[in-house]
Length: 141
Image 1 (cartoon, one colour):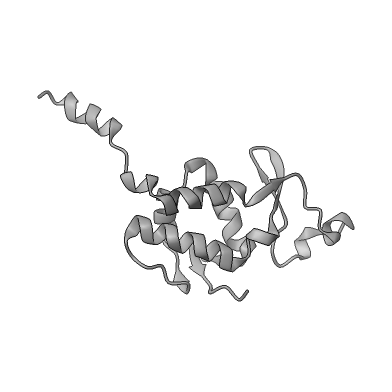
Image 2 (cartoon, helix red, strand yellow):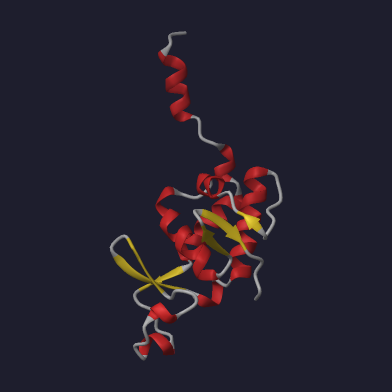
């Protein structure tokens, strides 16, 4: 066996945990958490400045405008799919208070969905960034 053979084999080794249903469901959830175009709620259609909103409504991904789907992205909804994916991937429970290991979450999140993840965590109210560390806050809804 040459020194190159293990390297080639490593290229085809895929973390099987990424194909577990809760992890796949989490990525699908992130993909569908936003709708195309600007938010059409009454506040946004009346032209109110989003800067005054406690939770963001509009986002830009892939140079296109998107809006958060409020009916399916409250903090408890995000917490539910995140906890299932976390448990499936790490085999450990995820507490909903305190620091969030975002590196691990990004490991089981498709790279193209990282911007959506980073937008949805604070927009849903589930987490916030404090001094460079993401903190989970139990959903109040």
